[in-house]
Image (cartoon, rainbow, N blue to C red; front, side, top):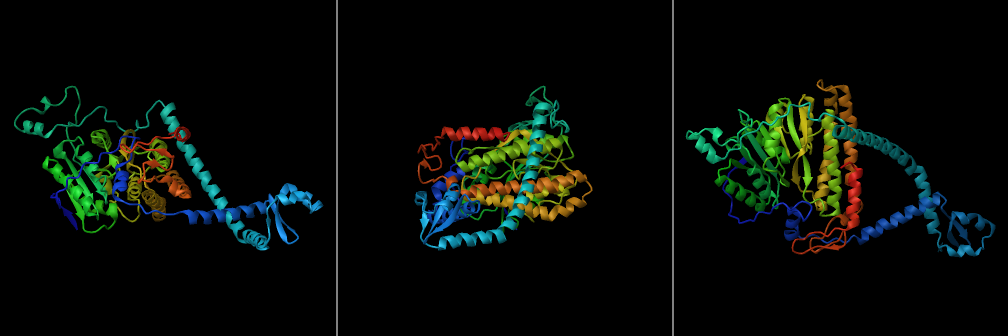
Length: 535
């Protein structure tokens, strides 16, 4: 059941929380959580001590096996001796140098080492060899994939005389007239439309209908921002609609979203607020149920709540779809507003920038498959319908739809020069959930579509192998790496919002603007990593 209305439940005077200036202050979501959500204080001391004890025990076993140290019984005690002292010990057991090593007065330590060593040889060694071999093979695939991306990106950026988008038909300066409602009224009274169109420009004779969909769930801190940004987009108003797909369960989030919708509707914007009674299918489910209400719209722009598109976004993207009938969607490049908030956001910026600037760019230039990133892009509605529509069988509905469209013969465009600001998860819990979804979703999709890929007739065998081996397998390995490494020290990546000090860098933060005073050494390391990653 869909519930569409424009009257807010209650009147709220919620102030607009603007997106933070780029790279300067904390994101709206972080500021909201710091004010309204009290974090549970966790004491990692016991966990740290346990991990430290296990690490020391394993280190002793490994060193003993490698004969860096060895255990020798002297009377009723056991001594740990360096390997370079072993010969001297055998010559003279009472040598004075023995006293310089720690001794264990019990035999439990010795038998623990022996038992652990036997278990390692009998059980862990075979499994470890297979695991190391398998990971080495996957690492070789990832390395080959990365080298290919770097070569293609470098060639098209610096060596090729042609642009990577020359295989598509460019808009060539054609524009869509962005006249206002007052000018439309003047035109209806008999004045010529050419009186308010700039001279010397070429315009499209037909203007397509465009809908901007904003799926959201409990985005209390950001929902008003994205609604404002979507309604400020430049497009002829009689061919434009904003659709807020709100699955929020929090009353405050719904009230803020409905208040923003009501305000823009009073200004003459064609905007709908759609609220479902259930959350079946989550984001994909809400977009499936909204497809019937946008049958008269040729193009669908999708934005998540933490994005901030420019007002000219549709002018820069939709003409590419209008000129190329075989193109299914246009994807733009992400940029990040809170990249320097914490160490966690910095690591994400490097990873996501590489994905955008190198992976997506190289795959588009090489004519290979690349997926829609779920937001900051425009779909052709005909492509969505022809590919079977949105499907919530996996947690990566954007990749699923992109793959089905690719197998149907549709082409995609990645616009590297058109950017869209967004907010990276600064909280570890949000990051963990996002990475879990991005890691499990491709694996689910890979199991479901492998047979479909092999049986497809619209794709060559080489591209099928690239999809199965390199795209899915390498992507899954890289996502697993990105998800695993921050787990080594999760508490170190999260700033304590209750204090005006950055616990990661150990430097002060201004209480008024909360601008971080970043350490110079961290800045230099980050720049070096960016250069190394070709970002």
